[in-house]
Image (cartoon, rainbow over all chains, first blue to last red; front, top):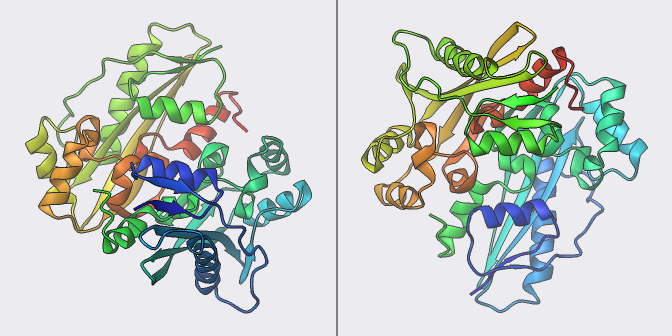
Length: 190
Length: 190
């Protein structure tokens, strides 16, 4: 039995390795990058996580446990995905500066025909950022492959003064919840 | 000018490296392991962080920026430091299970005769842990060198369902606050 992570995110891979998951395989889903309209943040990430997990489960053995995940930053009732370019990243970071937003990560665990799909929600507070700081942060390259144009780990730690919820959810994988989901499928991480 | 971290903690060192601090030197303080009586959590970690920073600043050049830090887990109006042995770790983890506690980290930044000492406070929620899970977590070795007998990063991520505050404060160094303190001394991290 393999544990298959249907994600290309290097952060999710690192987190799974940090937990000491045995028989870990990485098989990224192509995924659906365009979010469906009119969904709440939680329903949106659940749908996207499930789509990724189903896409990869179709390529796996029946006994494999397949994990799909999707993370969005939710502001003004709309999702911030990955920035298109540096100007888009600056627009997102200016909006997040000095304010609170919500991060949703959906997680789908597929095993033996069973589909368990859940989501976790965290609130994140940014300190006030100057335009110069935003420009310097973008120049590090860190924002470009991340939902909402920041990483909670890395230099982004200098921007986030507080969170409420699971920190790893903000990084892209709610580990405490995932651990409980995997346990239900017979994968014990502790 | 060097930035001198007066701490032997590998986690603090990793966090400073994650921020890309230039001219980083590690010079661990011997430190004061026995906490003074009758202090609040915040006052206690400030006193311990300042003591560590002063001890190391005495060995440094005047232009160096010296950082001292001390972290405690605070439960029932008392500090949990590092566990003495496995039984002590189990006692701490049983107390933290299914409940909320507070983590304090004091930070002292010393530079050119100036002493800036602050602290950060985070709340941490543990899910309910069975005695078997506690035993398995202790068997990983992770609890033994950590205040409160857990790491917020590593396998400990499976125990912590939510936090309120700065996540890196729980890891031992409140990065957002430290960044602002270092900026006051002319060290720009962003």
